[in-house]
Image (cartoon, rainbow, N blue to C red; front, top):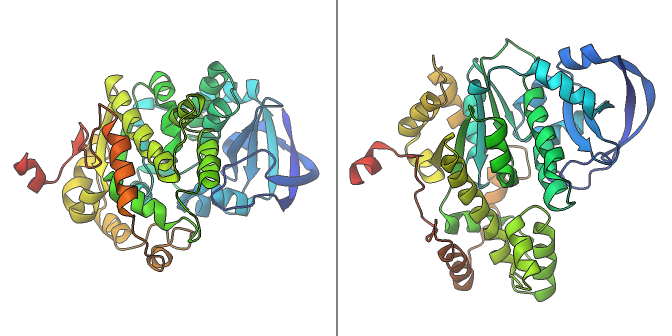
Length: 381
């Protein structure tokens, strides 16, 4: 079977953190590629889905090893894309079942965002036995397609399952024993589907005190954004309703949220979804940003052990810990330090009130069940 190869002549993306779309590239026909080559060659990787044409969209990369190591895989895919290839979903699913390896060796890294999950992904990537990808965005797109566009759940489930299986395809370097995928935070909206599709997988949830998390989120907002401007708040609430069902519920009920109240719904959604994974009986455990920063030597060994990763190269881990995991991106640590902004007292009240209304959480500094705790905290508890 031959797949048409279209050369990229222009990239349509308007912002580096924008979600992936099938219209991200302007292309022109440029030959064909054998389907078996698409499977075997590391240069070809899944980018997104086209729900209108029922196709999986792949890109051909100039340097797949650099993309594998990037803090945000989908951004590097867009930057490197030389060609686009489209595969009918029926063929895509058939191949996924051929590619898939042992599901018990799959590790999904979830998070609330802004909490050290990129660092955790790089810790896994530092080990030769682990193939670790940080934010392939086809999974986030599935959230948008379901929540925002209303695509039926069976279509989402089939593509979610096959997308993850395709990540086992050959890559540059030695074959790995484990596959680790760090998702963008919104993917936890699909927690129940993930649990159904991969009941033997391991799940790590990285999270952070909600007040500190809100401050980190606030740092990235434009300096002139008024958190309480009604029109701004309406637009932000409408935008997030396309990926967070809880925000859509508020809209349908006619409840207007300010910008901070809307954003903390993402933290709430993620933490409650983690609890849902545990309720499904999955091997799901938590890791706090605070402990990762203060006690990495205590929490990282247990993290790797729970994921079944052995023969650890601790020198490689220490090298990762000494670097900024998001250097050179829009979240570069040095750049963030230039923009010091504090939450107002009212913002803190808003965050606490939203979380207090959730019976399973109640407080912004909640320690979730299954969380890996360093020795000092274990003693205190």
